Length: 101
Image (cartoon, rainbow, N blue to C red; front, side, top):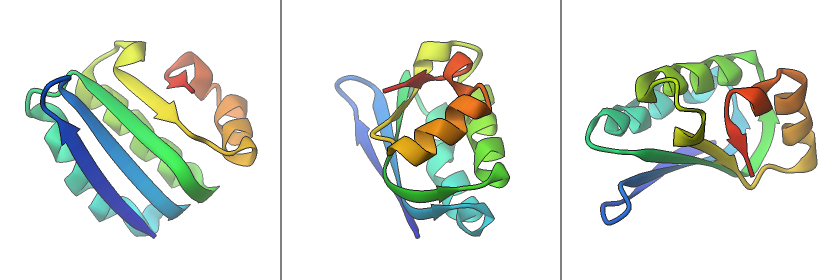
């Protein structure tokens, strides 16, 4: 369970990569990573390619991240989800709040 970030200053895109369980256990790491969202970042890619578990606290953290960048649905993209995680996001109607790729 780890959260890493990569900032592409040319495109002003912050990529946040979560590995393992995306639950309350990574809350502080995720919060620290999202602090960069207020520092001239236009787009955020949530790379969930290595996530094998998502719970309701993770959904809440994603909503807080969305609030940080405003109501622009396309500002936050959730990318590389496996079928199980994507299904959870779709059941929670996150496909209407975020761009899922």
